[in-house]
Length: 226
Image 1: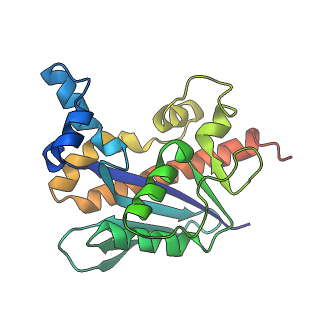
Image 2: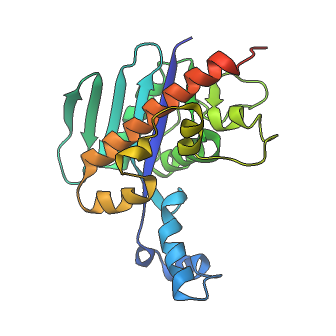
């Protein structure tokens, strides 16, 4: 069964880009300047207020990596770095087209918190871009082996109430965290607006490599196939 690991990075729109009614809705509970800033900072977390700027994918069996990332206003470009192929595209729609074309080749996919973030985000953004999904990213969690979400596996489908981050799980199992290289998801929006698109792509790929190591640890010590 061919498996692919993937992860995304997102960037929220500016609050002023929305119509008045949407701005009022988003700021409905913000009473102070600090609370308004929290709303602005949170816009990257929702598919109706943000776009996907990077998707990194890694074949579990071969360690071949494919990274699709936005560089607005530039012609598409392909760059090789080791076993990783980086594909820059000028917009989100082309990025998602490449993702769906690649994903259709695999039998199963692996994520960290994919059911809670990446997969719904991709599905909604694809619909907004009028693209039809080539696979169901949200299959039945109790019956399907198509999607292995490590956050769900490590919390035993929510039996363990605390949902730790990828960084914390990596630290617990002695895996190098992608956050140790000085970039976190909170930096992505600033990096994108600074034109550091390649830095976002490499950070996203480091997340995927960490997810691979976490999967191997879980599969060896904690996976009991039915």
